Image (cartoon, rainbow, N blue to C red; front, side):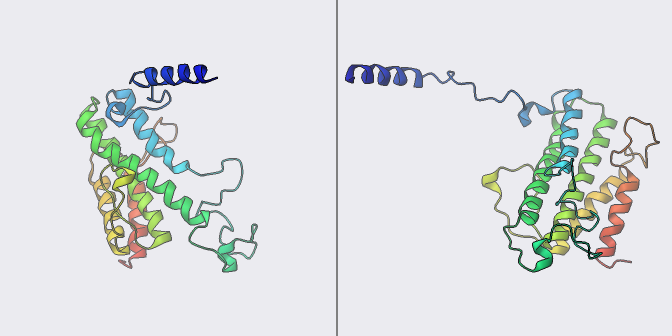
Length: 226
């Protein structure tokens, strides 16, 4: 028995010295360093920012994370799920809060990655890069918009960051609104971002100037800038 144990111990020791024994790179994802290295990967990277809009969303039934869902907050008195929010028993650890925080910050991380790396690494033509950066800014603005609706002030990150670097203090509600307005104004001022897409256009449904105007108008209403 001891002999077998020593043989196993020696084998483990030998193989543990080989740094290439285990391939730790995932096969179903790309690192940020290579994500933006081709025109196709640039498209896929921005599509990933859009995909963050669906994080945590139940596509097969009513989603508890959608703020504008019919009867989500029992405004008509037809509360389907007897939400703890309406019963006054909700806590900060409730998924309505924690999932919203997690999902929208995931979207912000993706948007920041696109905004920083597309100009630096993407080989796409300049007009396309400008449009995709504007779309990413619109999405970042939307994520902060939603977070500010729920939390009334959150930490603002405008560059890619690691979990260990997520140490910023909470910004005020007004500071978050100001950042949302800035991103949306950048979108509106970007000449390569279309005002709208015609129905049937392959880009129909993507962010546009019209969407940026509409979302900025909501922020002005929240801040009473009539």
